[in-house]
Structure formats: C-alpha cells, structure tokens
Length: 170
Image 1 (tube, helix red, strand yellow):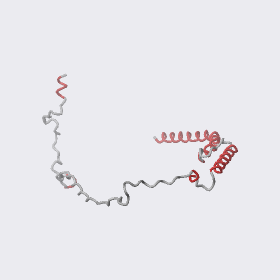
Image 2 (cartoon, helix red, strand yellow; image 1 turned 180 degrees about the horizontal axis):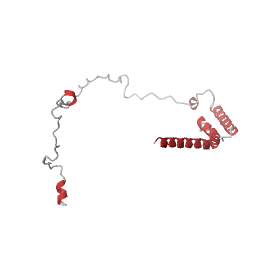
Image 3 (cartoon, rainbow, N blue to C red; image 1 turned 135 degrees about the vertical axis):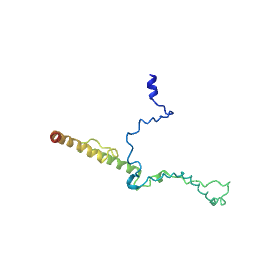
Image 4 (cartoon, helix red, strand yellow; image 1 turned 60 degrees about the horizontal axis):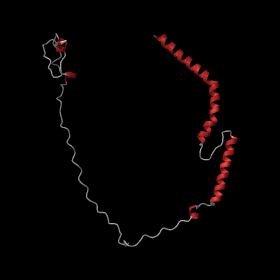
C-alpha cells in the first residue's frame, strides 16, 4: 500500500523532472513565431479601475413653510355637511324601481338559459366564453368520435413509412 501512496502527488509536492516526459525529437518549429510571423504580444496587465468618486452632495433646497398663519390653533375645523340617504341614490330612478328592474332582468336571464338548455344563468356569474365552451363540448366530442381514429391511424402509418425509408437509406 505504501508504494501506491508514493505514486500519488499531493498538491503541495513538486514533480521532479527526470526528462522522461521529453519527446525523443526536438520541436522543429520551436523558434518560429506563430501565425505567419506575428510574435505573441506581451500580456498587458491593468490595475482594476478604482471606484469612482461619490457624486457631490446636492444643495439643500429650501421649501416654503406651510401657510398656517391664517388659522388660529384654538379654532375648531368647520363641521362636515350631513349626507342624507336620498343623496346616496343620485341615479335617475328610485331604489324601488332599480330593484324591480334588476329582478326582471334576472328572471329574463334565467328563462334564456332554460331555453338554450344550458341551465339557469345567474347574472354576473357566467361569461360568454364559458357558455360557448359548454355549447361546443358536445359538438367537439361528436366530431372527435367520428374522426379521431382515422387521424391517428393515418399519422401512425406516416411515421412507420418514415422509419422504413430511413432504414432503407442505411
């Protein structure tokens, strides 16, 4: 085992050059410069750029003081105006008429949903995309049932033909 340990170099050990790794013949091109007569340029080492100096400090901008001189500290703020319930409903129709209209629109939407055999359609819950998707599902299923087997068969046959052609080339 100790002989094997001698063959392994540690990173701190130096390899002694006994000349066994030298080629038998000298390199005939050793004295020739590489790349058509161009000698290798000496590498130029640059010191890394020092950090740029910090930007100069900004001059202090004087902002005008708030104008509170017009008010006395003892004076309370003015009272806020009271908002009446009728002011909240600034629409063109009263709350009662709006609720009745909303009820009628909801009833109409449910009837339309029943007529299309897609179930009740609550207002604001279903999007047009959802309705279209639901209507297209049975049509797409029917088309796939009729056409998918022939499509798969044709594609598999094309792939088999390609493999046969590739094997014949070799």
